[in-house]
Image 1: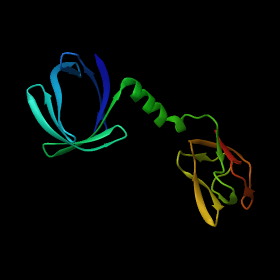
Image 2: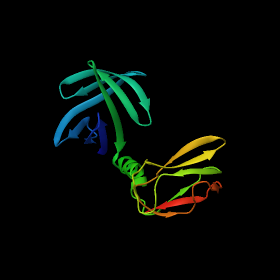
Image 3: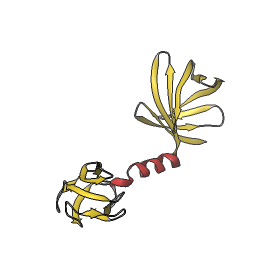
Image 4: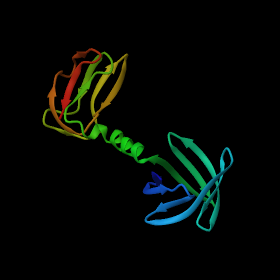
Length: 166
């Protein structure tokens, strides 16, 4: 028996696939099969219903299905893959100490936060001018600004720790 986490239009379900062409979904055992007709066409059988499905895209584990005029965004992952995906997705949110480093040498034009300010993941926190272009740097995690190691108008080298978020 194999267990999968299937997400259809942002709704997750756990499905167990049995060896004898049945699946278990929400405690119900249902006869099921999938037959590949062509590169982008499948025949799906669930219980006594049969559906012809066209796959509209396959990208990074995501599959788009068009079934009877209805479109479904779908991902299929093993339990282990789903756990790894969730950990990776939440990686930036759970860090206890994050240094915001200069991605390139440049001039620190504006620091949008001060020590003690709360920042959210992805929030703009400073502007670094490099090669005559202003780059808006965003917070890699949520937290509170604990240290600011440079002042506006100072030059920074690539990799320099500009500020620390905890």
